[in-house]
Length: 87
Image 1 (cartoon, rainbow, N blue to C red):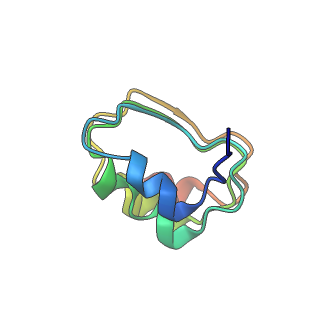
Image 2: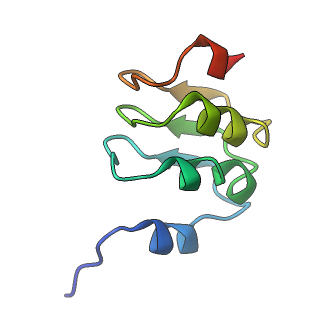
């Protein structure tokens, strides 16, 4: 069976308003420009792991400006997310 390499383009195909859980842990290749749009792609998200992602405060803030239902969030070992991004 052929394997599919996960890219931003094909990940986008799997995300929708029905997506409630998303684990992007260790997906270091994701760029700020993609992560910042996640809030619009999955507005009903409840569980999110961004562990070990190297995204910036700006991308984090933009994403969360569209997320209202997150109950669990893991940003451990995400060195560029600081207090100002979480405010």
